[in-house]
Image (cartoon, rainbow, N blue to C red; front, side, top):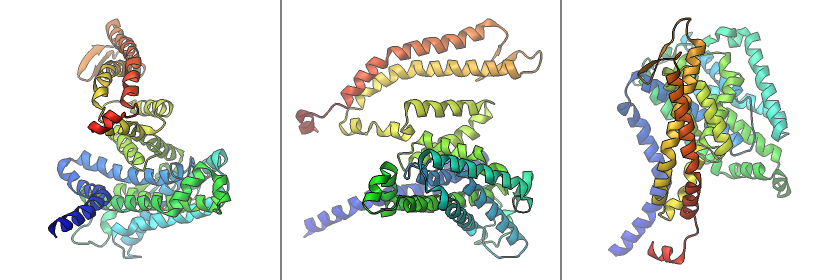
Length: 432
């Protein structure tokens, strides 16, 4: 009897751990992160990560799951932020009495409404036409934000005070750590909802329309309706992200709904990987770290982000998550050890090449932007004169030599990769 009970327990526990384990791990991670990284800049960075994660996942509902490339998705993010900050002011003026933690819902509702209005005509077309319509609508709304000052506040935007709402359990959101847990809670809920949406029949049909819209029509599904539902859901979650942005920064401006913000979310999603649910999460985390940390050390951090985006699109179109997923077959066949040495042999000279190119760019930037007569610059704690020939020889030598040795290891890495991913033989299967 005990053996039967143990067998049934094992059968139940394995699916439970597989199904709910990642979510439990995510919840615990969100709770303990502020205790691990407790500085003000760390909390600020994590708040920004949470907002961008929701925004990037919402955008991926269009691009990754539905195949709709949008250049104006910041419209729903920005409108959600504007609506939330207005409700924040209504609470302060005692027009309505609402706790701050439900304000993102109103941002999601306004995002949903405008997504339905705009999607009712834009989702009738796909591909390049849809992308151009989204770009035009985005620029139109951005221009309107500077014209209709009563709602958008013009160039100055609209400000609010998140501490004026009724306190719940003594929480008035005056501290950034309180805002962090608000964002973390909404991030956990929205990530779960978007994941569930991707597993629904509508989410599966969005994948089908993305892959072959004519075949989806043949089996009785309207590609326009499928795209519209995905578009509306994406606008709703983007509006929630905008509402959280308004609570975190207490200000929303035209910059939050213009083409620059739309380009940022596109960049995050592509870097992380549009073909994977966790891809936008990875992209949002990496972009936020580059934006908040790298910008403290260099003024041309945006150039590095742009280069990363270009290299990702050219050489790793599946994104960084796809790059990791490529190693799953070798990992399952227990051949990852065969890739360690080739990766090390090509990684070291590649790192030297990247360091040399970064040094060259930083030196050029200093020469171009430094004040007249200022020739000394500091790079990773090393001071040198940019008007002498030695620094230029060093950075150029690092770039050329690193690139040469890295290129010489490509064939060996390719051979090791083919060996690690070769079909498993019967002997290997028996031994494993």
